[in-house]
Image 1 (cartoon, rainbow, N blue to C red):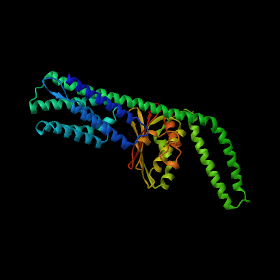
Image 2: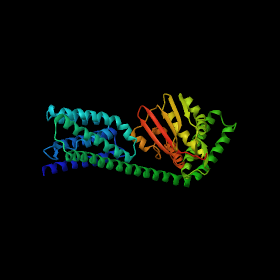
Image 3: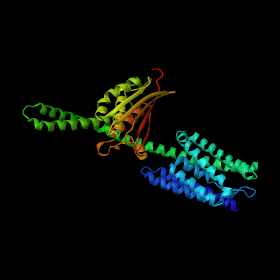
Image 4: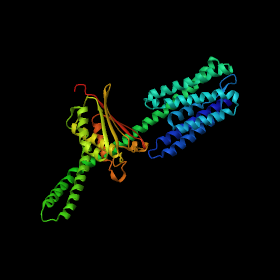
Length: 416
């Protein structure tokens, strides 16, 4: 009875951990440091709970589910948190004496090194493969511990014990990772729906007022142009007219960006040579790069995709412009175009200021900009809309102070 209650304590501790971790990971405006502290505390409390309440399988042999929060910490939290968990488990294990604890402690260090080394590979896996990977990893850890106990301490390991120990650990991590990943997938879908709803509002707004606003702007600019050409107005006062026309041009550009959303898909679809289109866009952006002491480098592979040349150039210009502006002290902007199976991929990499995870999540939202008062957020919003209308996807990877990589993926046009 005691063993069963202790097992339930282990299980409840892990379930509470899941609830807390998911709550903090799904918050849109959470502070990364606070999130890591909460995760570290939750994982630590679960580890302590599991180790304080071990349960028996048979023949007086006990174990607990501490490896589940340990693996979760290594795969989902910061390296410092996983190091702390390793240290905590070793300290608690050493309370049983060095003679019986040295092997579990050494094994834990090995598991820590293996798991953290495999973490980047794990993060790039799809959901199903993540679940399988975690189960195989836990099975390996279970076999390692059982074989070590058998060879080093002559623990009587039966088939039943081996099966029970492996199943408890492996099935536990499979279930936990499944819940984590399915919740993450649902949250990602919810974020996408929210972003699409915001874009839809902008789209309706653009369709309803853009033409009405554009007409008086055009008329006003025409009269200002005539006044600017008049000889009766002093040159000093003409400078005011020039500023006024520049501001009207800026307003017209913003409206043109809005109009991109009024059209869900480009009117003219054609086969585009990706290499040539990118080279044309680079030629457009070269003057801005020179002004900001930014070196442009490109390595492009020729292939064909479907889309509208004008819109594709507009979206690409916005992305390149953002990359240049992210390097106020100069740097290198790299554009690489490759073909991978059925996809054409374009990677735009800068070594600028970078972005936080929260900024990456909000990228492409209406009115959200990393440039603070200098940006409207419309440029990235336009780029996202254009890429999506071409059945493409955008992946953003960034780290503050180290730069950003934006990867565009498009289906290949094999008939091009």
